[in-house]
Length: 111
Length: 116
Image (tube, rainbow over all chains, first blue to last red; front, side, top):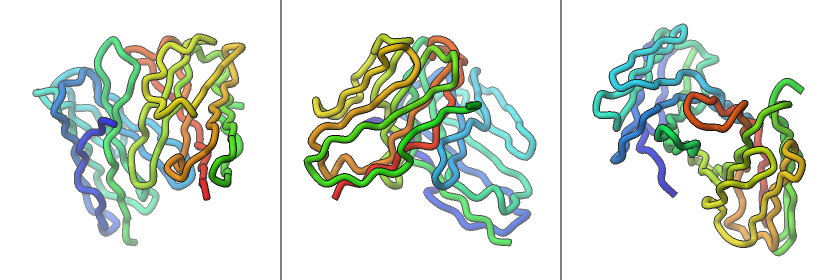
């Protein structure tokens, strides 16, 4: 099925470093979402973006909805060990309910 | 409970067996979704219910997959004659209203199905 292109696939970083990941699509979407999934758990919503160009923060997390509506990025500042997990972008078109997910970025934080 | 629950959490089946996976959505949530998450991939949409009505089953991979939500609350995903390619985590999500615009989907922990 259709999936969004997410990069990097995985990253190892030192505690305290900033992290950046992005998500691209060949299609236009009206809403972009970022989720975190811990092992053995379902995805949990971190940030939702509803307008092209929108920049939204949630604590140490900042995400932006690209102006072309075909991409989004997520930044994590001053990473801590509990940031470990898999981060997924997701997107959908206004008026639908069907989320399209990215392939995930696996983040590992070295203390 | 406060969140979406799924059972069993783990299921091992022999190829050819039938399995049934249960989802208990958040109480009062109108919409319910099933997703399939293969190893190392993001979730992929399977089917959508609004109350007891199955409005979209376009993501079901074959006619061996069947989902129901007869009373508009608990849902069951059934897989008949399981195949090895059915091995995946099956996620259930619910949302408060119709599932459209700005209606957040809340995910359960998933059922990990392994077909031997």
